[in-house]
Length: 190
Image (cartoon, rainbow, N blue to C red):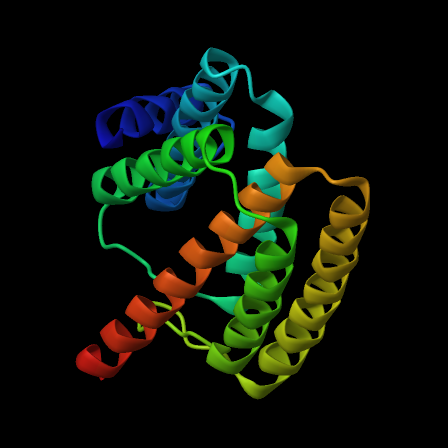
């Protein structure tokens, strides 16, 4: 990834789009872009392969929004993050496809998991600590998404969308696990 990002940065510098002094910024930006694109391509491929495109989209909507505002585990290199993210997506989609859990159990589990997410907030990283203004903003956003997810779960329960409910609860389980590990890592690194 870094080599390709370096080549892209060299190309735009050669073409005069940016100055040499900004090379590191553009290399970093291209690296992040390439990493995100590779994960999205893999995720779409897995979702298509399993015939679970809507479930894949739902997973990402829930996972990305919660992780963005609640925090969680941050790995130090792209490949470890990529592998863990791919395994997470694949595992949750397979679980959604193959596991049946009674709706009452799912709703109760979801309520417990939502309380856990709220109680574990914030999960910070030594790479980026959150100031008090950001904390208030993130907490308000997190509360909004938790409320939206609660309504979604209640609607899915009412409509008896078992697969959707399993996916949401499995995603929340993964979020709580990564929040706990992230908190432990932050304490160790401090």
